Image (cartoon, rainbow, N blue to C red):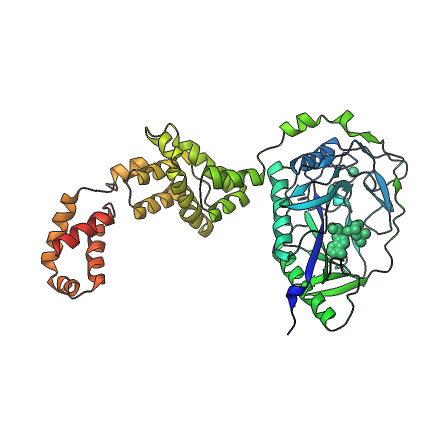
Length: 481
Ligand code: ADP
Ligand code: ZN
Ligand code: MG
């Protein structure tokens, strides 16, 4: 039997993410990842015509600096851009402008993982080879600002790697600096992985083409097993680049790394060097930071006291989280008691349940449904909290609010849906039902719980679901004694 516990897996990530800016990194072409017409957002600079000069996009630099500030990193005093030389048809200059010795951001921490650096470079064009006996190159992506983040080798499982990548995606989205959609290639993850039984690192393998968090997690889990198996068999792990085969759920060898590629980096003479603090005021940039994903998570758990699962759901779905918060704001001024209730967290928890289960349930079944007005949603929650609505009626009202944009309070009043807690009506209906259904009564007395539920159902029906089931049960049990 192989014993995995004596092996320690070590993982380091290299993540590229396209940044959202009006224009490209070094020219004034539109940065539009959704442009479908090939070679429409291009100019003489991003197609590398001779004699053209690149100009630094300040907005992109600012985005990277803010990422650094959010991660408590050290911000560079001095930075410069370097040419990374290699030949490929989708890099028309024969080099990519990147940062080598002086990255904008050094160190820092995200989701408990130490960062090595974050630097800024330009994306390449995109080649396609599936059109016939030739290849096509689309330069729309050429020169789009691309940040590269490198972590220290301090991650130990596929799950932890996926959680990290997910948190980075959220950070980019919260800051509005990138959509980081992995399926669209806006965020691309490369994972380096080695296993070892000692403190010394083993030989690392690099996995590429990981286009979802699930794939990242699975590929790493697979690779950990593969490397352990190899060592157990007395084989050596080879330093190589591997890809992920989605159909086989396996990694496969793509190319064996000879010695490391020599990119002949040197500072780009066409671009000015930069004293970062002369161009940006860090105090001002810090003020521009929005609420960050981990801050929101902390608030939901500790201040709002909602379930961890709901908190994570709202943190991961920014729009939904925003809606949830608007509902809470909608409580204020809507109700004389609401301030106290909000303070007691009961309303917030109730709202959290109705948003995350009922509302999301309806919206995921019908994708055309839009978020309702938060004040109206808040009214439903307030009525539930006041004991005025049964949970069944509340759910119906949520559905009608989504589909017909009703005014829940008005509908509840006009259609007699307010829960009746007065026993009088219920006793009257119950007495009549008991008299009309001697067989059901006998069943109940013989110990059949279901018989009682039959009566509860009938009374709910007779009162259009507006009776409190607890009250109904109590009345029935008393009458049937
Ligand atoms: P290279 O020179 O091959 O690019 P780097 O030292 O630049 O290697 O590291 C690239 C990535 O690989 C970083 O994320 C780093 O944390 C990670 N890494 C380095 N050594 C190992 C190792 N032995 N096992 C796993 N990951 C590693
Ligand atoms: Zn251009
Ligand atoms: Mg490297």
